[in-house]
Structure formats: C-alpha cells, structure tokens
Amino acid sequence: MDYVFGLHAVESMLSQRASDVKKVLVQSGRDDQRVQHIADLAKRAGVAVVQTSKNELNGLVEGNHQGVVAVCREQKGLDESQLPKLLESIDDPALLLVLDGVTDPHNLGACLRSADAAGVHAVIAPKDKSVGITSTVRKVACGAAENMPFFAVTNLSRTLKTLQEQGVWIVGTAGEAEEYLWSYDFKIPTAIVMGAEGKGMRRLTRECCDYLVKLPMAGAVSSLNVSVATGIALFEAVRQRR
Image (tube, rainbow, N blue to C red; front, side):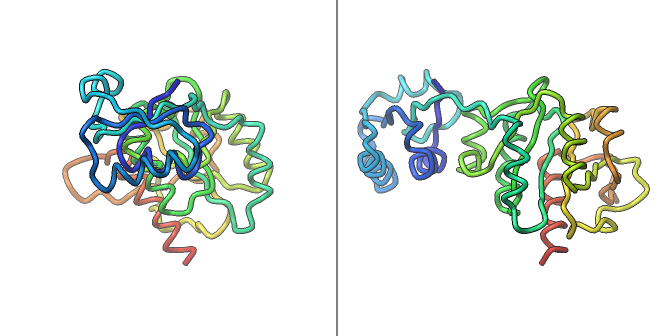
C-alpha cells in the first residue's frame, strides 16, 4: 500500500485514479468544506471514508497531512515499454523531461508540478539511485504526480538512444556548456535532461545528449536547485513554442 496525503494530492487522486484508492482516512472532528468535498468525492467513487485520530494519521505519513490520507495501491511508474506508444499518440512536437538521478522527493515533486504546468508529455528517470513516486513526492506535486506520465527506466542511456531513434532531440543542461538555454530551438521534439543535485548529469547520460546548454549565472552561486533550474528550462520551451 501507498499513502497519499494532503488536500490537493488526495483530491487529485480521487478525481483521476479513484480505482487505485482503497479508503480515505479523515481526521476526527475535521468537517470543514475542503475535507467534506474530499469525503463526497470518495463516496461518489465508492471509496470508504473512515474517521480516525490525528495521532494515527501522524504515524502513517511524514509531513503535513492536513487531516486527510488516502490508502492506495502502490504506484511504481509506467513501464518503459509503453514510452514509444505514448510518443506515437502525441500530435504536437514532444516535450519530455529527463531527471538523471534526482534523489530528493521534494525536488522530484516540484519538478513534476512544473512539468505539468508546462505541458510536458512525460517525465523519465532511472530506477536506480533516484527517488520514485513516494507519498512526499505526491504531496509536494499537488496533484501533478497523478496527472503526469512517469517512466522509471532500467537503462537511461538506452532510453535516450531510443528517443533519438524516434526523432526526439536530447538537450542536456550543464554549467560548462558554451551555449545559453535560449539558443536552442525548443520547437522541435525535445527531451530536456536535468542532472542530479550537486553532481549533475552522469558521464554516459552526457554522452547521449545532442546539445548542451547552460543557464546564465550572474551572482556568486555556481548553480541552482534542480527543481528551480527545471522550471526555468521548461518555461523557456513554453515561451518559444507560444
């Protein structure tokens, strides 16, 4: 079982994946409008709503559950064999986000939220040495984790080569790149690769990239948080495409 907590995340789960929700736990005494709305969604979907204590909810999850926790089937991400089919179904030029070894669930959740807002078609990450879709990720993503196709792949380099064979250009972000972000043409099918916190992209991932670009850094710091850099890169693509 997996636990989805927080008002936004539970509401999104019930709206988009109610069949994966086993039951919804609601803190006793919480009868405000937001919680009542979630209880109504659950009942319409045939999902049991159970009143429980705040202490029990605190023991189930780490973080601010806001009085609601959904008990769900564990979500491990889509199988990588489904990625080519997803690409074939896209009418517009593909825009994909690749996260090479992001381990902080707060960063992944923020990246998913930005990807959803930017209209990204899918997020791809390696299975090993990366955080998956956890309850904290869902909470931070505020519903994006339920809406955004997430592929956890066995071999990231092989997946990138497969994308190239299907006409997707791979653009990686690296501080030592010679070209700035806006010099790349994001109107073509593109997968944006963001490196891990601190270390950046791995060598094999870097070697798979068709282009490397960087963000302008005018201050004393040498890099940005990966979720912040992801938002900047994605919305440069949005700017160009609009």
